[in-house]
Length: 310
Image (spheres, rainbow, N blue to C red):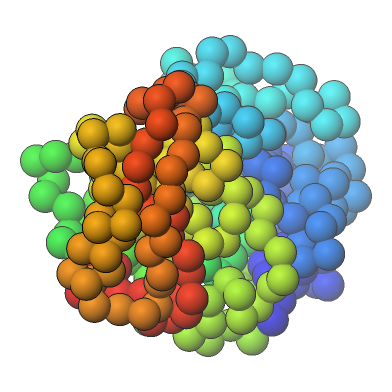
């Protein structure tokens, strides 16, 4: 299987009409052998790579959850790096003054509330307004392209964690999401497709390693359970933020019996695709920081049989 960035490097003439390019991505924008996409683009485009945009959590994927990034900076090759999770969510006109094409290589997670896809939509809007092009270097959906789950968004609740009427588990690749969103935007959009991807594969079928897309998705197991446990963010139960196993630890100080809690949930979900081990943990930040939480550690046994919203 080949990613869009790999196909571009094998067919460099695909970029012949792109002109001056900005790159939208982060530290997870790498090839299977860990070559950074922005380095490969710089090798290909030279001085025609003129700017870098970073999504939520920053270009280096270091900023925690919903903290607002302030300001911009200078990045690889002395290029300006603009945060699109700062005082602006959409590239400003001056950020695109030296840009003809925005080249996107962002790894999505398969869940509606993950904001990267909305940053792509914001770039599509800016491109449509200013007559620029957007190119998507496609990437797989890490939790597969066959299982769709959860209610579609009620647009009365529209926000930056949900802009479009799609379900929580949406099954789309990066390019599929961008193409869907662009139907209502009308920007000039080009897709560099993957090769050999059927949509039935999960990340573990394709690759041995996961590069964290954001600080609280450090492992592929966190990604597999994220569509379920992210729903705990609005509760007083910790979803494991501030620990080494975010979205895999679930619990709270007021839960008195981890063993009974684990058994109750395991019996309720009636699935052996995950194993809920009784566990204690102490978040260093976020909910219940500094307190011992009693709950479970979710171990992923068979990701393809995790039916998040069954």
